[in-house]
Image (tube, one colour):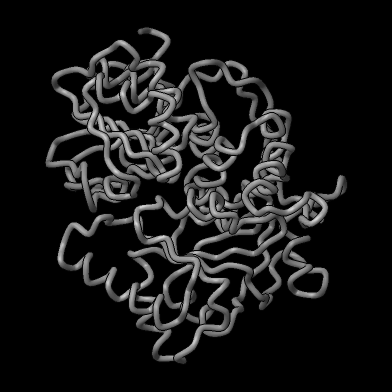
Length: 417
């Protein structure tokens, strides 16, 4: 059996098979300031007490601090619910983006089943958990019962080999995969990432790749924990390795298909407007004019992303025509970036530093684009109107490319600086 089938089998109490409908208990249910209020509204029609307040996490990250009366009202509804239900795992004071905060706070472990009212909940597969997004109505039922149903997904094994060069990052690998198989290429499948490149990849890069599994339609993205992941989880949870339920695929596990990706000669990848699978090597689009550059989000607002950008921006200035926005993914990352001098580097280069949050990624708060403007961003989606006006454009890339482009005013390969 593969890792996903093993996790679901353990929860179901029997050996599951792809296509089977199962109802299983969940270990954590997560929502944020954008999705909690509709879930609360539905929940209150069902019952008045959550199944377990210790297994619910609510994070404010989409419009923080509240930027409209509507956002403020949504957050008040959440606070009232948190207080009424005694939900202790609430991170509502700027701790950061949900998909960074949840693992930072030690809420993720291998072998767990985690659901969230956000499509990028698949991020936690980087830690060997089965995690997936769901709608507010489904989340309300989880809050009420502690259970949910799934159709057991079949799995695609994605074997990645080759070493990253200094100008590419895990973001380029996942964009290349999405560009290869398409936005519907893994619909309701498990995307299991394997191979020497994945085994040697750090926690942050793994999170980036699993985060974007949903962009090819996958039900979940998942990886077997490597040593760095295990050490990270032990540090965050306070548990010993022997206390973790580390699940690995059998050598004879069955997959719907196996795909191989060799990244040895990969150049930086760019997802061009208006689909994440509209991917080109940077050599085909360098020189494209842009108005805004953005480094942040649950995909690439981590310390390694800020480090990569700072190394390029050191002793450089951004072009006068460009707005460069930096949003660390969490308060902890923000503080680390301050201590390491990255924030000074960004400010000296002319960047705007924003508090941790999702705002510009969804065109809701800070960095919204006007008609005809374009942005190159480390975020995960570039759909029409995603970051503002429907006639604006979004390009997706790694943070090195974004930083280089901010200096020149056009999409730029960092190796050419």
